[in-house]
Image (cartoon, rainbow, N blue to C red; front, side, top):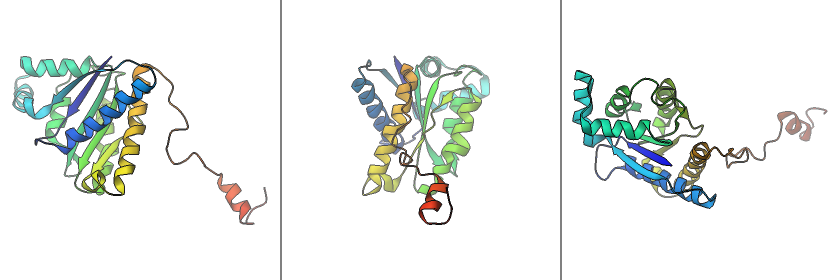
Amino acid sequence: MKLTIVSGGTTSPSSTRLLADRITESLTKQLGDAGGEEPEVRVVELRDVAVDIAKNMVTGFPSPALQAELDAVTGADGVIAVTPVYSASYSGLFKSFFDVIDAGALTGTPVLIGATGGTPRHSLALDHALRPLLSYLRATVMPTGVYAASQDWGGEDASELHARIDRAAGELAGAMTGAPRSRRASDGFSDFVPFEQQLASLGQLDV
């Protein structure tokens, strides 16, 4: 089983790579707990092939180094794609990498999307930018995306980030192994009460 990590971070160390690593750790643990095999992990650091991506955009031909990274993504059983958020969207480097992937090469591939940013305000980039991009490439995007703001790495918010990582990783693990996803995942809606029932309890409606 092959798992490929696409990290769009441009610094070292990178919070984007850190988030990708945390998701990978959770995925590997959940696969192991379910009796599955440990995935063969390949990390694609986009900053290492940034020049190759730019040349491919101009010439239409990938270098051997870039081709190897493209093959790692298109040949994976699952992909974790994480980008820093700039100006409320994915980075140009991240977008350019997916622009040079052949159309249809990701069809049906399970992809977990993630992003990092300075404030929680950029979390919507997951759904208005990353999800449409991967869906356009016909990948199967996991329902749960993971966004980590600076404040999420410590304090009270850290537990919420870890819970979201575990949930998203579980979805990807299920997609990679073909196992059905639990409908009672920790999503905050397990104790849902119909609105009519709530009104009845307040004496507002007879049911």
